[in-house]
Amino acid sequence: MSHQAAGVGDGGNGSSVNSDQRPSTLLLYLSVDEEWERLKTLQEVQRRPSLGMQYLMAALTRDGYPFQYRDQVVQDFTLEDVLDEVNDQGHSIVGIHCNVVYYQKVCRYVAALKEKTRARVIVGGPGTSLASEFIAAGADCVVKGEAEFRLTAIIDALTGNGNLDGIPGVVFRNPLGEARETPPASQITNLDTLPFPYRPPELVPLYGEEINPVSHRPNISIMASRGCPFRCSFCSSHEVWQSSVRTRSPENVLDEVAHVLQRWPNAYFSFVDDIFGQNAVWVEQFCRQVLERGLQFKWMCILHPLCFPKNRANLIPLMKAAGCNCISFGAQSNSPDILKNIRRYAHEPRELAQAIALCKANNIIVVVTYIFGLPGDTPETLEENIRFALMHRPHLADFHPLSVLPTSHIDREFRGQDKQITALSQDEIERHCADAFRRFYLRPAAVWLLLRTIVRDDPRHVIKLWPAIKKGLQLMLPQREFKRPLSTAQPDRAWATEVTKQVAPEGAVPVAFEAR
Image 1 (cartoon, one colour):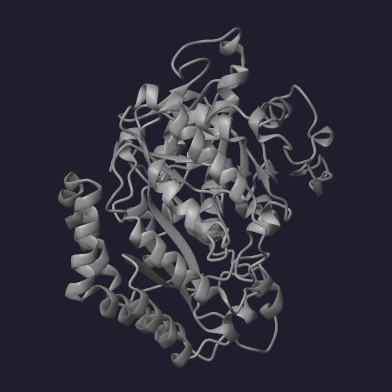
Image 2 (cartoon, helix red, strand yellow):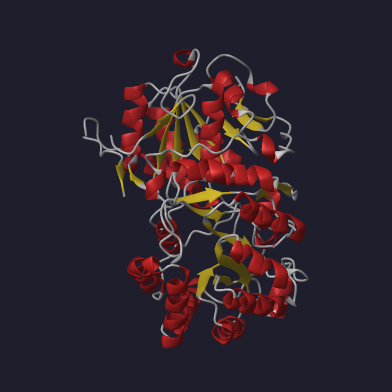
């Protein structure tokens, strides 16, 4: 098999004390199901690693537990391949990352693993709000919250060297077959105590955001904080992180950057925080330390339209000087009424317009994202979004339909209620998204602005444009989105009848884990 990520101890390929006596774990990060066409396209153009899984690999490496890792975003493998590997390699544990978007796919993998192998199966990640579904599929343990300091204890308990009852934040079946959930686990208060993520050297060169024209490979995902201070009704981040915000010190973040640059000197860094730099003081300290330490790297981040409005004029140029060449803003809507409906602020468009102008003046690529189909959306409010984008002309704009996430406020408000989120049908929303992409990108001025900024940042990036253009053309057509609503109201256990379809007949030759 090629492009495997295996590790234990320092460096990922060495050995540690008694590691051969510790249970082996196979970690899986699955891709979005084909039915979610638009989300599948987005995942393909982003090609981001799972930072959460990289932190778990670091925890296993720290404690000397052997593991192997499979990432379906950049590797081709099937369920049958996984079953064969578990049986051939004798893995005691299979850990699967879960997300509410592809929870049914995770359930299919769980059910097949329990039927066809002797491995114990752990499920974790932001989709654990659906823990009952994974337990019903046969999962031995569902881990809620951060697992970096609990994972090896859970592995030990599942392999006979401990008791899950004594581990906080887990859901499992007791000997009587009853689902049991232990009290919530405490959050990690000091993120600087986390080990730096383990980045499999075989996979790092495969990650790269084709849609970001000023990024390059290897593209390194990194986080400076966990949590978000906002409570947007369409989002479940504040539920996942229990409404708390914790930030690493600028020194710790830059120590990680320097560590990565030693191995990959030309790495590009994508900060995947919900919001980069929760306050102006932190951002200033971070940028000044980049300059003081002489670190040379390019990076992008995500900001809220209301991020440091009083300090924006000073911080944006400083961010540019420290290597920032792309900022993404989550606008979501330009309508004051819709913004209020989603727990946002009516004056955000005014602040966003100023931020866009300032970024463009500093030659920073600006990305603005919108959600179509929010509560109360009409053709008129969607038109407001498009007009704003056409008027203020960010370099890139993304228009995508709402996906209702379990535990989000929208899910709770509309679940089981005899009322609609919007009067627009899914097909109408898709058509509006496609129309917005066409109107925004099929303008000579848009092409010229993007090309000019790319050349100023680094002329070599021009050769990257064609892959981004191809993906952009895809988004100019209505996507065939999965019709099943993402809601916990009536979980659909279709995965139970689909497992046999996903498993090849006995004796079939498995497809190797090849890089995409």
